[in-house]
Length: 135
Image 1 (cartoon, one colour):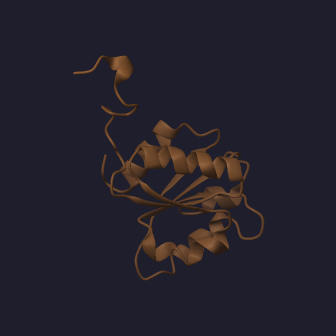
Image 2: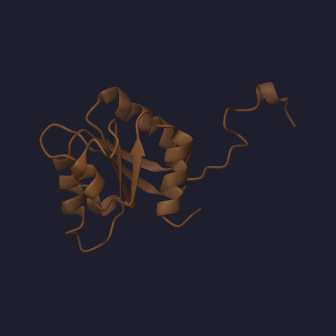
């Protein structure tokens, strides 16, 4: 066995999201890229878009949706409403820089999960696993 310093990064890490198709909806380019890299590293197949409207056409290829609550135009609650009209149920997890008490629409919406920014990607992965029944 190679010494620890020469093993490939992630060589012994479990790929907790292997086989999961994640649709990320995030308006910020840098944040979207971080989601893509972090979730891909955990084994997920990631599709990332910048608006809720872009996400609609991609819903059939998703097992779960992660969406920012506050986006220009249609927000995360609007996207959740659209997802809930689909023939196949797809869980939606929202993330926001505001607490539910500061955003009544976020608090009232029946998201499968709600996460507060700044995000801890260990927590994001754990939430995905719980929502999909893999925890």
